[in-house]
Length: 306
Image (cartoon, rainbow, N blue to C red; front, side, top):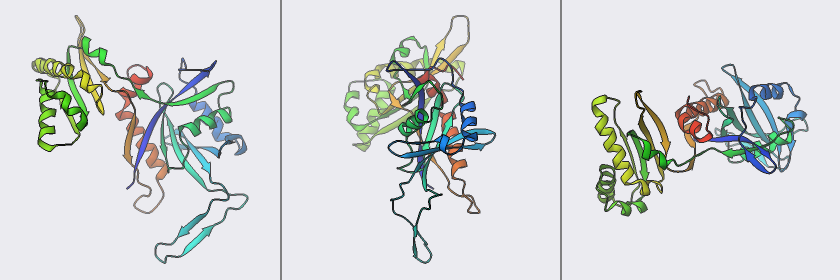
């Protein structure tokens, strides 16, 4: 089963040459309904390539399929794996072969998840071109940009503890841990010394029990000790604990390294009876990835808590 990448992007509005986040979530449901009712010409745009949008409804929710129409001059063939016979595919004037990307619009901000069906399927920049080309939102110039998890190192200073820390350190960063004495640094250093030129991914989680408060404080202190190393890590995030005077503790997921938010998902193409389920599988994978990364996505686009 092939593993595919889910990429998360934000649709923003360009005004006077400056990209700005929209004040409210745009009416994607209404826009997709318009696309579903439009004829092919109205939902097609030809720039560097010919793109067509269609709408797929799954679990009573509309999703966008964006297709790149293959050029009529591209050589396409089909091989029969049983016989080895090769058959050329010829396009008629009424038909075309397409590469497809699946796009889901998430229920917060103007965040979308995209899964490309292949290397030549439409990218987020192709989606941007198509959205503006067909003027899905008349009067607005749109930009589609990657959702980036921003580093929030300053939040370490106001936290009272850490309930979970995830760090991935590459081999070239291990040397910076030599003089550090905290538990995180020591554990990472021991792994590097034991196995040589490796990358180490470590996850430490402290249960939410009152008697383990000191453990959460200790974990935060160890994280602060290596904060300068963590900023250059491959991946680093923490769920920090905050104590409000007179109120209960609350937690917040904090990204300690800037990175584009993506996920790898296995996407079955057919069911047990050989029927195609590629689109349904892609939608399921995108929405599952969105749930897994919802905290980071909301934080990155300032969409508030779930």
